[in-house]
Amino acid sequence: EAGVAQSPRYKIIEKRQSVAFWCNPISGHATLYWYQQILGQGPKLLIQFQNNGVVDDSQLPKDRFSAERLKGVDSTLKIQPAKLEDSAVYLCASSLGQISYEQYFGPGTRLTVT
Amino acid sequence: AQSVAQPEDQVNVAEGNPLTVKCTYSVSGNPYLFWYVQYPNRGLQFLLKYITGDNLVKGSYGFEAEFNKSQTSFHLKKPSALVSDSALYFCAVRDSNSGGYQKVTFGTGTKLQVIP
Image (cartoon, rainbow over all chains, first blue to last red):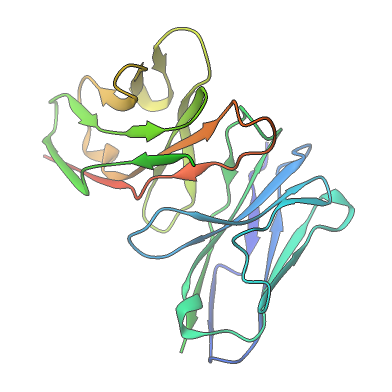
């Protein structure tokens, strides 16, 4: 089966610019996650969707980050405007369900903000 | 609040020797525990999980982990390390007894270096 797809793989932008990331989860996976992984740290959950509804966005900086999951499939994560501290790898993951199910991760998008 | 700790930033082991990567956790209820591996420039890959039942869990690539409730630990093990096992390993926990939604918390990761 196809894995989680993400694009782009790499992005370099200047601070105050905007950027968008795209994720296509594994077919049939109801739960979709966006994580931020800063070098040397573990993934930090930004937002979790169950189908097209938000389950948790408590750690999403809502003044600059937004995410949507249209029709319960693909998802986009947007940053506007970007700050230097947003430089990180953004990982998308999906799972069949929420509680006991393992997550399947995409390759990530490495964002550099200059 | 749930938490997970990986006390070693890096573990070095000689090829062919057994390896252990440590993980301890803290939850209010019963834990769901996961191990993931991350190779350079790639996303995380699921290795194994403990949900319930046998304390010794077997996973991908010959890895296994032992759930120890009294010590609140879930150490990752492999009898004989390969150079190709060199990667970053993450332990993760979710509280099964939250009464509702509870997100997964990841540890900070342990870099495993297998020396030829």
